[in-house]
Amino acid sequence: MDSKCQRYSKSGGRRHRAIADAAHNPIFSYLLMSLLKLLYEHVQLSIAGLTPDTQTARQLRAQHREVMEAILGGDPPRAAAAAGQHMYFVRVRLNDLELRQGRRDLRPPQPPRN
Image 1: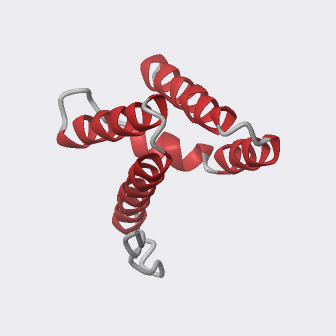
Image 2: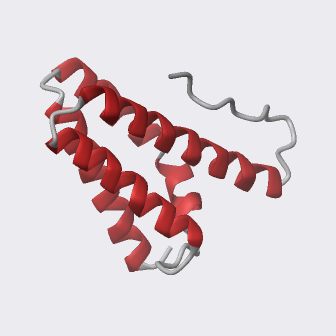
């Protein structure tokens, strides 16, 4: 992976850590960071070849912006909904990548319930 993708991946980790820490729940923060470490390989696959001008990159930026604005605006229900939509989007994208790589045993993800 090139250094630009590595930097993007690390900044994503810091972004997710900041969101977890904003919850002021050390257990949640620890669990999220443990989960992100497990998903690191998938994140690498997800952003490999992802250039800033792609529809996927624009969608990810918009999702991150929505989560951040909801948190900064003090709107937990909006933040939770935005985070759920983001997780669904990422899960669908990872599922698509794995299917293209020959893993046909995966079930399609279900959208988050609000």
